[in-house]
Image (cartoon, rainbow, N blue to C red; front, side):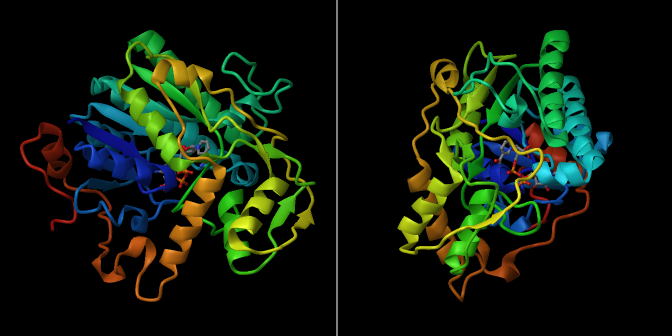
Length: 352
Ligand SMILES: NC(=O)c1ccc[n+]([C@@H]2O[C@H](COP(=O)([O-])OP(=O)(O)OC[C@H]3O[C@@H](n4cnc5c(N)ncnc54)[C@H](O)[C@@H]3O)[C@@H](O)[C@H]2O)c1
């Protein structure tokens, strides 16, 4: 059993990681500022974790959160290309400076290994498909630059300070709990929300742009493997399903699953979006033993089931009654962070 810190653990991917770590008997601490994360994402876990509500830019808080930690899964960051175009500094602060703080704290706390949530946006518009780790990088948006800066910081900390880092370049992750709200939502939850309501989804561009859609369980699997695999410190890996699907094909698949015949509404292409993404995942398969098990159609079916369950009248998100959800502490007592770290006492910040 390891003490694990999941930054961004109240977010979409982070909360799935939290569940998987708890299921394997690990002790889990979450650090999140709830800028895009949601306490409801931790509904099945909140009485088993230590939850620290705060920002990566608060270096002292990050250091506190790091006490006694063996493994860090660094998921926190503002994860949106359009948001980064509208407000580049906030993306830079959370993704680049935030990562630097996490690395400094992890180095000083002698963390065994840090797994970084990188992004396929590092490749930009690659001339060659599928994209391989050895391909040149060409980040096209402030988001891509900031995520890539985080990657480079990880590499430097491994090289200079010997901190074990493994960088995972995630390709278009989708799954339950991914937010469809706000102007910066991702394409799969936006399509699903619109189409479940009988509305046509919006496509920016001609719909022939393609993505390597990766179900969240596959990403969780890659993180768990990266935490334990031997001789991978300093390496980076594509994490994807390994198949490219156009947005028009995504629409067809959802129509098929829902029994609908909805057509898209076309809008102008968005700046900063890459045209195609398609990963070669052989390096992760060989080094990590990564084997994505859920494909796009299976994953979409799971998302639809989850959305329909959420809409059942007597239940709130994740099937938990709303009144059982506590408010997160702004900043937990240090004893809360230390209790988990020493293993002397397991205590959650809600005091339940
Ligand atoms: N979802 C994808 O398709 C995808 C693809 C590639 C990379 N990634 C990366 O994976 C990670 C998780 O993505 P996600 O889709 O779960 O996003 P998300 O927005 O659901 O989760 C990010 C979490 O980080 C928290 N956060 C943001 N800034 C913070 C800060 N400064 N301090 C503390 N917490 C902060 C948010 O509140 C949120 O809970 C991100 O780093 C993202 O860049 C995601």
